[in-house]
Length: 389
Image (cartoon, rainbow, N blue to C red):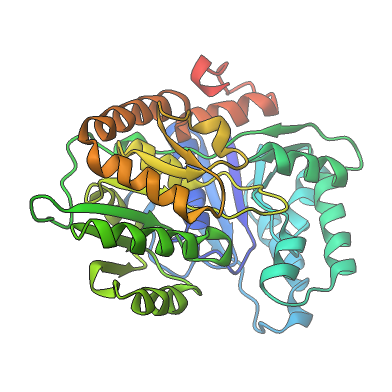
């Protein structure tokens, strides 16, 4: 099939390092790996693509102005770019706040239009990034959701959000995030070589307010008081970094922590191999709608994961089998989990091996692509394997 992959969100540099960028890259690679021709239409494709996507046709949708008044003009440019290309069988769009043209174009051309919903963007924008013209954003969302022939969400919480906006009753299916097994070979070497006896606790992410890092800092500081060999490895960057560094300074453990800053996806496996355990310390949130990419990657790397017991994580992780749970925001319970794993190397090994087996069996990008194509009813899509269901 000919597939147009659309990402009109300027906040996602599609060849960048954050989770959204990784998702875009992996979905495109999976579709291409299944033999389909994919062309990318993106508002932010300024970086160099990874080697495996070097031959990908890229259509940059660029506006002369970044002012708010120009945000809806993206739709005119996007529709014109789609119309100028050869016809597509499938238009696949990552939902963005001000984009509706791709789904309406697919509908008008008789192509399948798949809208992938990764977050309740209107609420997220209002809560974390300042004001938003909610009425205008809701009108845009209604147009995009109504025009789509199929809606894909990464969690069951988002499925309800999508169903409420799909006035025409387009089917909604939950397809969680995944991993690329080729990025996580069993023998990957650690990027950071720790001294004998060091116990390294790791975190991977963009350091946003909803990642719950204050609880991790508190737990790490408490653990470090009783176990001087404990180290903290923070992979990524973001708006919370300064406050995290200040908190580490205040607790007197800044010297025991390493910040890598933002890193390309190719460096993530080696950094995960440098950890003994990995943490997903999400706080209690009114609506936990995430499908945390970091946790899939922790598991693929064979790491025992300590996570707050929230949302989709309760479906992905089995307590005491593929990871350990604690109550959201309970730094004391998090400390206890980390200390248990510090003292029990055998438990770390068993949890990590079981986690890796689970995620590589049930959650790969190839299986995800198979599943989505099957849901579109495309004749070129094979019936999904058991792992893809």
